[in-house]
Image (cartoon, rainbow, N blue to C red; front, side, top):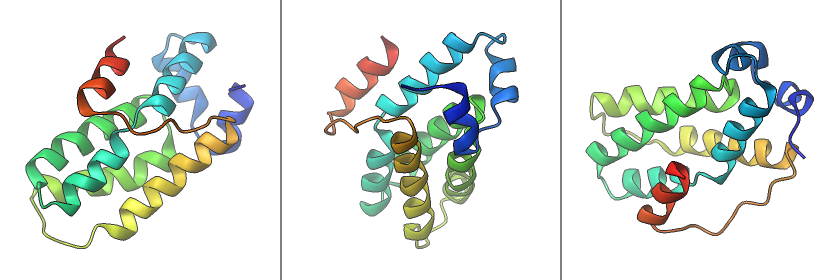
Length: 131
C-alpha cells in the first residue's frame, strides 16, 4: 500500500507535492498511483531509439510535468535532463539518463509494492490516464 511515509523514503518532496494537492493526502496518493500505472517511460525509450526526437520531446515534457507536479524528485531529475536535450533536438546517447529514469521508476514501484503492468498501446495508455 502506498503511503506518505513510503513517498518520503523514496525521496519525494512530499510537503511540496501535498501543497500542490491542497494538502489532501488521499488525492496526492491517488495521483502517484496514476504515475505508477502510466507507462510512457518505455514509450519515450522507443521514440528516442527510433530517432523520433519530436515525439520523444512531447512525451518527455509530459512526464517531466507529471513527475515535477508531484515532486517525485528522483524521477524528475533524469527526465528533466532528457527533456532539455530533446527540446534542442540534441542527437546524443540518452541511454544513461533513460537507465536512471527507469531505475527510479522501478524503485518507486518497489517501494510502493506496485507490480508494473504489461505495456499497453498508446491509445490504451492515454485512456487509462484520462480516466
